[in-house]
Image 1: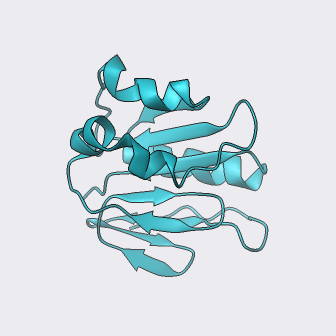
Image 2: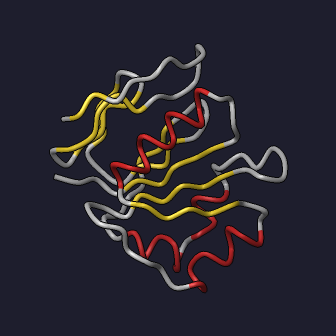
Image 3: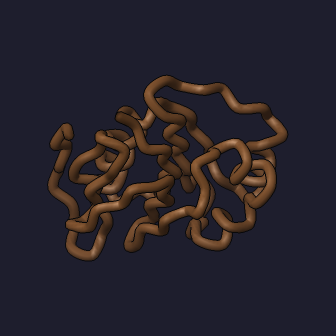
Length: 129
């Protein structure tokens, strides 16, 4: 696992490690797709990122806090970046989110940096080896 821990304010989620099909987030281990929000992390009952995005976007939107224009949803697509169809991302953009796609490692690091800057950010992350 790669340690990527920056300083973050108390109560905020921080992705401490990723890899080996798991995440260490604020001291707790997760073995599945996760949605990391400002102050809590949710395990998502799926291993298929595309099905969650296209069939049940409400599952994610219910948990993502869109506090103000410019809130960001980072999607970590696994070991490599996977470009998703615009239709899959439309519900999130329609809700006012800025959606960024990147590989999971980059998504974890970007989430931590934005959290440390007190930005409105959430990350939907697919585990990697």
